[in-house]
Image (cartoon, rainbow, N blue to C red; front, side):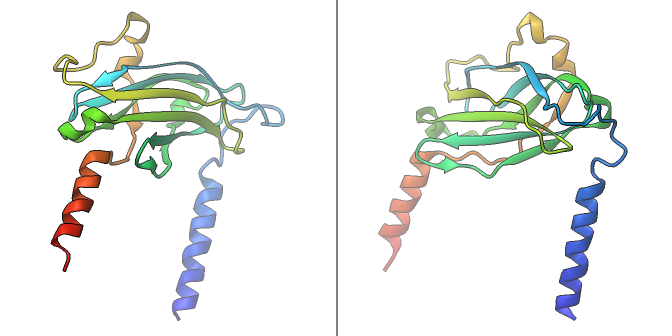
Length: 184
């Protein structure tokens, strides 16, 4: 019975995966990868602030499917890969931003995070990656990040949220020390 249910669930996921791009317009052959034309993000934010990552992308085939984000943090390693699915209206081209909420942890002041983003289409073709670095700093202004003139229009188009929980390497090491200290 359990084996049958697992098989049914796997088949449902397979069908859902196959239909995610069903009906999407593709060019002849559909083998041209998307291109990230430009990107921008503030170099630093306060711990607890939301980091906005701006992207402009285009796909000659008009079948962009997802923005793939990989975060790497020295001392922590790679976080799980995040997929932000692209709305149908944006599959040919878009200019907008993703957000990454950060925890209000003062220990983050010692950390930095490298975000590598690619855009993937329905055929699995990927754009060339762009890499942006985030540092934490209390000297950064309160309130929303300043947006350069080039990105003002894109600031009105939220593409999604990077669903990764950032953590501090210092707090991780202290929590580890406390666990060892409290252990019998």
